[in-house]
Length: 396
Ligand SMILES: Cc1ncc(C[n+]2csc(CCOP(=O)(O)OP(=O)(O)O)c2C)c(N)n1
Ligand SMILES: [Mg+2]
Image: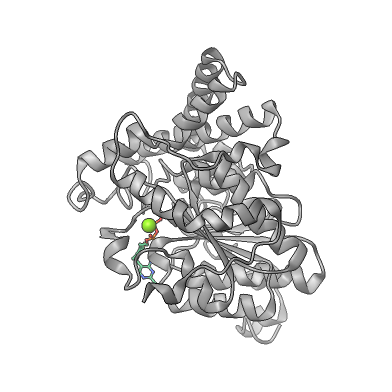
């Protein structure tokens, strides 16, 4: 059965051909690496992605900046968790802690015509594209100064001015929207790409498959990024898919390129994301990437059972040996790009910034009752004809 799905090598540049040839082995290796950990060999890599074209030109300043972003994201979410526990916010809080290299790696490659959309685990993507901690923390608190004016909360961070299109709660609901972002680029003749993130739990949804089909059929410049953190709420990825070995390989059914990425290696994330984004920008072709990663906390903070459907040892193993921030820091220390002192200073500053955002959020006003219908429909806010007759979508 598996022979039917043997990978098709259709990559376009030299760098990616070597990656393509290795990708299946690489996948098996990274899974095995994750499965049979030893403390001494946490990061076996058959390829050093530091030498890929997009990483070779990465300046020391940028490398440190990306370390700072990942640290800021983690400190922001840790501060948010503390405030959630103190009863400062309602609804859900889905933490991205453990997965930071994915959002930061992708955002680090975005230019003015590239767009990003994701699911409800969206804090990191928002901060990675350049949103501020204040507007994000205030959104968690449901305050009027939040990025969605306090009406979105944890799952609905948005920054259209930064080409960040949210934060979506329906599993795979963002996948046709990501397709639309890519379609818009093509329609306008813009040389960009649409990055659409989804979880491993979204890959069996019909909307995703319909999106893949149209993306391939119309040649849409979209990159679907499956953040495979191993679990969909309390269900392990191995239990939720009939074909469980490789999620990205489904792309072959749509005649689409795909690859598997080791998310703990920041260089690898950038190298493979770059290939996919260039394919979108230059050839107007879609890609599916599956990035292996891990979340340290439960599905949301309300997930009290997260140490029952996976063992505490498993969680500890990932924290100890696969933490993307620790591994990136170590890499930069080894390259002598970073010193321990600078790393510590970045961490302290990130904590301070997060603490300041908590004060900002706490002191901010709540939205007014009168504003409850504002910012829901564009037509209402702009008092259009469609709004007057109550037909928002079809008659404008
Ligand atoms: C269509 C739909 N079905 C079910 C849910 C409930 N639900 C919310 S999150 C989630 C799990 C999704 O897991 P995954 O896609 O792996 O993303 P992760 O939480 O791991 O980031 C489910 C089933 C939903 N929001 N939408
Ligand atoms: Mg998941």
